[in-house]
Amino acid sequence: MTSTDPVSAVTAAMRVGTAPTGSPAPTPPATVSPPAGSEPASGLVDGVLLARQAVLAQRATLQKLATQAQELSRAEADRARVLHEQADRSTATPRPRSTTATAAPSTTPAACALPTGGLGSVKSWVRTGAVFLGCRFGVSTMYGVAGRSGASDHPAGLAVDFMVDRANGDRLAACALKNADALGVKYVIWRQRINTGSGWEAMEDRGSVTANHMDHVHISFNPTAPAVSAIAC
Image (cartoon, rainbow, N blue to C red; front, side, top):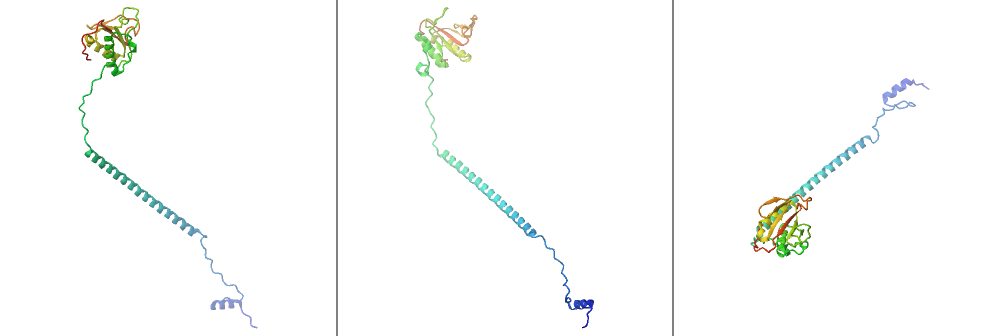
């Protein structure tokens, strides 16, 4: 039996492309693969993000279109309303102007419902004058017949006190003096002054607001009814 040189056998095998019998086949170089799921997972995330951005963009576009449609609808509705109102005004029948004159306010007790309980049993012309002045200047509190310690026209039913503020008292006193003949006024006391028809004169200090006639106008009337009836303030 002929012995074979191992080196020669390997050389011969390499020439014919086969490994010698009994020798292990050469191992090809290993191929390094990327980690499982790395590249596919990254691509999936990118796709989801792109899809979400597309959905959001589409939603924003739809919302913008809806807003524009609503604004257009409101504008059309406003325009239609304006046209309708213009048409109504153009066809409306003009309202005729009233030719009835406004009646002057009455000064009778029934007309102004003036409370006269505080007057008591004053003379008839005194009551008439009090009601006229009270209604004319909106005085709801008046005092007529009353007892007095000193000289006064109140007990005889010939005087009336009108409880007023400063502005109203000024006007009432002026009106009474202006119509003294028609109302039968003898004199007026107001704010610590007296006027008998010849102008205001100062009076003595009687010690209090009421005693000095700072909160009311006092009017004394003549003992006989006036003959003149025309009154104007």
